Length: 385
Image (tube, rainbow, N blue to C red):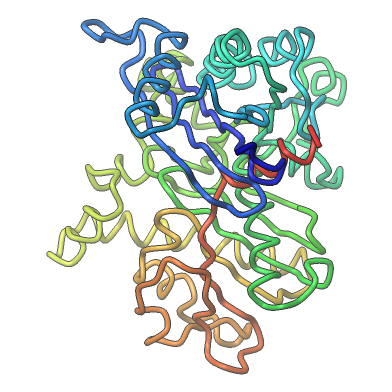
């Protein structure tokens, strides 16, 4: 039996330098027919030589699950691309010119865009269907100038495309709408602060479904304290470490991106392990937790001021969805701003979107699971019709 258009799945791909995440999604229903991860692409001793081989491995795994990609009526392939630069503010159908532009943006996302381009190239050769790029930065492309502009010489900024781009945009956009659905209110009526807390963390201020500020900047390093990233530091730290510690710019970049954050303060970057150590009275874990929470409160307060008040404070992503202690600590002491959680609701474990603030609270505090793959699938389907 031939599937109707609304039953045909979209293949969502997220290509990293040595990995390929995939998910087969029906956009209209949210049904996930398959998901998986191919790892160690191109690594020594790996049987997966490159991204073409990774796609072959994916196809073989799916065949083992009873899914034949070659015979499947695939609607399209949606690709997650981290950086869209100043030129991409919406999902876009991929042709040779678009692929070249994604490659050209590698200077802005050297760890992500080159891998995405390789994955796209391999997938286009294998699947003769429309391919769509969905950009992490797109949701924040319309930030107002006062939020997106750095106070550096304008000619320099224009020449080198320096601005606040923001990341995790697909997640923030999805969660903003999902929160409105949870509350039964039009997204256009809501002022939201969304905290996407995983190994990478970002905050956004969203008014009427549109982002007006976000914590990540030119790169994903700025903003909140993360698993291995420092988040905000004095920009003079780079020069200071160069003079006093003799570190090169590349070494400082590695230090702040891969050896800092929760890892640098506590010795671990898994938040579950941090909480275990915290419960055991570890001083490094306590400091790391308190620094994380302090920075989160800093951004919540800043965005409340920018929005002129908020209707909803929303937690999402791995830590945001699962850490009772983080949600309790971030909201502790904010009762005067109308922000508080009900202890029992906050402690209840669930995988569905839910309100955790007391009934009748001035500000709704909610936990809303993100689903970036579904968001990519839906945006892909919308574009290809």
